[in-house]
Image 1 (cartoon, rainbow, N blue to C red):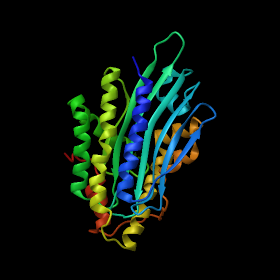
Image 2: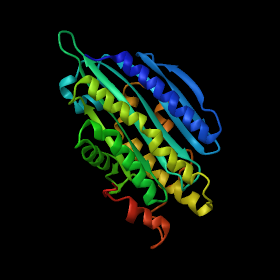
Image 3: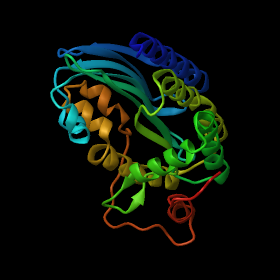
Length: 299
């Protein structure tokens, strides 16, 4: 039997814990913006802009519901078309100012559908992935090791499956390149009972700060110049392309009448596109593509 209230309470606590940890690192306070959705539900957006460490970032909680599945969800699960649905979760994207500090994304969510006379159909989803502008092997290894430790107690095969899923999902097909160094990603997870599935998702959410904060602490004060900032803005363009063209969460939010400001909070504040630009061979910028934006086993 599902316990929607327990899931919601976990998400609210996770949002508060993550924001508190990030405020310790940055020294600035996240603003809190509560909102309601006319179709049903609402959320709490926690946002920071022009901080000491974060140029822009947000940690969002949402709990929304509706009568018919949006197209992005109905296409993946056509057998559920016409059902009432309820979705909740925490989603975050952080864009540090320092180009040596990677952008990061994390999301954990719960989705359930209902129809009269039928059993509820529910599942969990989520994961986290790292998007560096300048690659460091120790950072990638730490991030992947923490992700592996989070899911390993729930199945020996889960990390390999979720890592592969992440590599395949966060891939810009039109560019034929990865968005970053990956992490873990899962969706439609209900292959274990509710309690075990919920525990696995909680383990992923709780692993975010241990996975990301040590990397951020190492890189946030590293010296950089205009060259690094320029490359960061160029690579951020890839982030925008993925979120607008491929990301299921963005599509679902916009198609379900979600709050646009909260959905597009994931966009970086400063971005550049260049025509057919290539980094100089042997440069640190070139090494990002050759050494890090490739699917490899980090742990």
